[in-house]
Structure formats: structure tokens, C-alpha cells
Image (tube, rainbow, N blue to C red; front, side):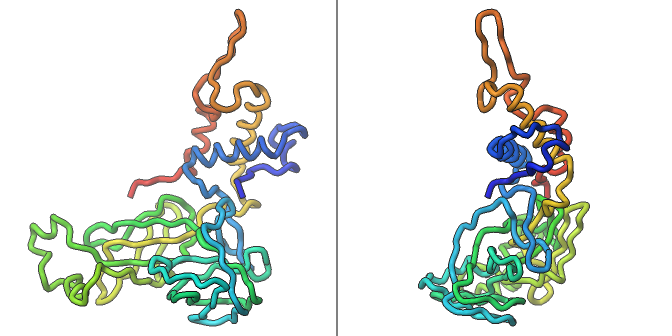
Amino acid sequence: MPSEYIQPSEYPVYGLPSSTTQSQVYEASLLVDAFLRRPEGMVWSPDWMGLPAYMAGLNPSLTFQSSGSITAGSKVAVPLTKNVPAWSDMIGEVVILDRSNQSAVEACVITAMTTGQITLGSVVNNHNPNCTIDFGLTIFEEKSLPSQRSITRTSRSPVRLLSGMGRYGYGRKTDQEMGMYNEVNLLAAIQAFGGPPMWVPFDVSQASVSYTTREVWVPAGILMAYFSEVRLRYISGFQYSALPPIIKQATAQIVSAFQANPELQGQLKSIGAGNTKIERFAPSQIDNDTRLELEQFRINLVI
């Protein structure tokens, strides 16, 4: 569902009249998300324990159902009601079980997939037959690691890392020039069996995440060698009850602009009639002060 950063009970707190409509709040919230470059929004939904499980502003990219009950345990095989083909890219994917059941909802990681069946690394709760299995509700990023360093940065914070995959790539040009890339390296040994470098999971509990710098230290893979690339799936944002007031205030300011000048809502920049002319100060509904307030939450693509 789309972001909704102000609830009706909060309208008086942020100076909005009771006539404010939900559609106005939706549109203002989406403009905030667009400025922050966060299509998933700023709000996450909790699992059964109250921990971040998935982004509330995302819609599932795929939804399947289990053909039988799911029993808690490790390496749990889950048959699906549809004969879904095996996709190698699904390994490491985070799925949400029982999203509509708050007492059982949880995030699980796919460790294997065969036609019509997925295997989950760990399942905490028991789930009934026809349990929903939602894909695409977490943030996904693929990063290249610096040479000889097992560290990267996420574009968003704070972060709850749910799944990590890594692989070894070809040596960098600078390494080749220094003679560090030859036929006896680790990648050459792996590729002797044919095919491209494989993505392998790493234990996210062994990773270290900094909430101030967005840095993620990635544990080494086989033979204690650093990965060349990593895939990270994580949750970032706030539960609605802890959403920073500045996000709500910015949303309210945009809604107020809609209500004060409804004729300027949307893409229109100016309107005139006779000697009267009304012009919006910028080609945006977000003024400079509000932009400064929101800047701290904007995603950062700098490594």
C-alpha cells in the first residue's frame, strides 16, 4: 500500500483541518518518498516478535501459497500450490510468510529451490496450509567491494540485514598489472569446473552494520578470501509509532500547500486571469526549508 505519513487523529497536531482527505495525504506522502528516492517508503511492518520484517510501502512482486502446512525448523522444504520452475536467482531471496497473520508473520530466506518447491533456511513458527509466501517486500542492493577490503555501504539507514550473498569475480585491471591475477588464483580454481562465479550465502549474524556510517563489514567466504561482489537484502526505516516527526511535518506542509492553492496542485506552475497572476515559487510542491528538513533521510549512493 502507498505511504501514509499522517493519520486522521494527528491532523490537528500538524495544523491540518478535519476536512483533509486521505488522497491528499497519500499524494503528499508519495512526494516525500520521491524526494527521498525511496519508493519503498520510510515505514516497515513488524514480524510476530515486533522486529522489522518487510517494507510497508511495497507490494509483493510475487505471491505463492504452500500446498501443505509449514513446520518450524531448519532447512524446511515448502511445496507450493503451483508448479513454479526453479530460478537460481531466488537463492538468498527473503520471503514473508503469513503476512496477514500478525501472530505468525515472519521473514525467511530461501536456501534452495526446485520445481514446485522452495527450501527455507529457518522457520520459527508453524504455519497452516495455503500459507501466503510473498516476494519482493525487502530492499535489495548489489554492491562491488573495494579491492582487498571486505566492506561496503548501504544506501539507506538504519539497517536490519536479513540476507547476504557473495561471489568472487575477475581480478581488477590494477591487480592484473601488478601480477596479482594469474591462473592459480581462487577464481581460476573455482571456474575449472565451468560456469560463471557462483553466488554463495554468508551468515548475516557475522556481519557488522554501522547505523551511523551505513558501513557493512562482510565476513570472508571460502578459504577466508574476500568476496568481490555482494547482494544484500534488508529493511530500513521506522515503525510508524517511531516515525520521526519531521517526516510527518513535511507531509503536512505539502498537504497545506494543496489546500491553500488547489489550482496549483500537480504539474501546473502558474495561472493567470486578467491582471491577476498566481505563480508557484518553484517547479515542485516541496519548498527549500522542507527539503533541508528531509535531506538527512534521503538515500545516499556514495560508497
